[in-house]
Length: 153
Length: 83
Image (cartoon, rainbow over all chains, first blue to last red; front, side):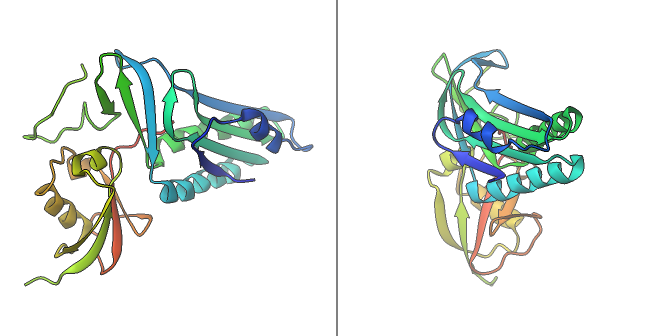
């Protein structure tokens, strides 16, 4: 199966779950990342995800391959949503099947942690007060001496 | 006079908004991605210090000091926030 992919439409977890089924596996672990209605004290009403897809897919495939090699799991996959998402929607899904639960949990945790740190994916938050901002890019990262158009605090 | 190279630059997320474009082709004397970013920062209202960014050349992560060659495609990668 495809190890890592993006989708612009809602993630269908039932089909993904079925693709991880394996008679040699006694455990399946999954992680779902959902769109939350708040971040750092601000009310969030919508999210927008954007990615440098070619590089992110290659790097995502590497992460899944690393997890399989490192933890010895049978199958693993990750799907990340792009575009505009409403509160409660599924933004990212990770699934792992393995002979035993311990390596399934560990591989699942490894994949989501590495995806969040390594993949060129960006998240723009739209706030209840009408403001918006790219997460990790606008509140904390303004270069010294440069203007900052607005404040989300 | 420095040698000029044809470079394609693609912009994502905050850098897309700050440049108003997804992609541009330019002639640049920059020898490295670091020099290119500093040149572009004089043209666009970038707020991200280069220390906060990563860079990809021709679709792979590279060092900021990697030499640019003619026809390279460069992407500056703002702090990521997947998941």
